[in-house]
Amino acid sequence: MSLNEFLGSLLFVSMATVTALIIFFLLRGPLRQLMGMNSRLVEAKPFFVRVLFVTLMLLALGISAGKMFNLPPGSAFMEYVWQAAGALNSVIGWSTVVVGSFVVVILVLLLGLGRYRDQ
Image (cartoon, rainbow, N blue to C red; front, side, top):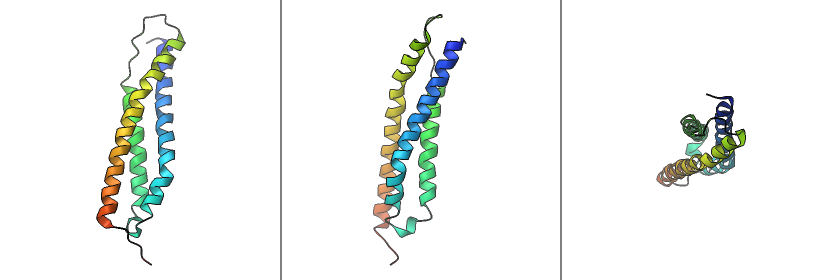
């Protein structure tokens, strides 16, 4: 493994992780607010937020760990950067699937419990 391959792989892992973190931080507030609509779910709020975080991070790390750069030896580092940036579409695509599935699970949970407050 050449230095450029190692740096390209490291760059892709960091790009995938940052993408997953951005998605998580964009969804964390609305998820907490949605979970706050039902007082029966107050104790479960941290659990579901952590599940979303762990799922997104494992997804990003799993996809980035399986990425191989098939470039000819002696390629410039920028070739690795462009290939890593092109591979981010799989991270974003699978993150969309995970978030969509998570939303379905949360909505089924909220619809099953109904809008309940202890007031």
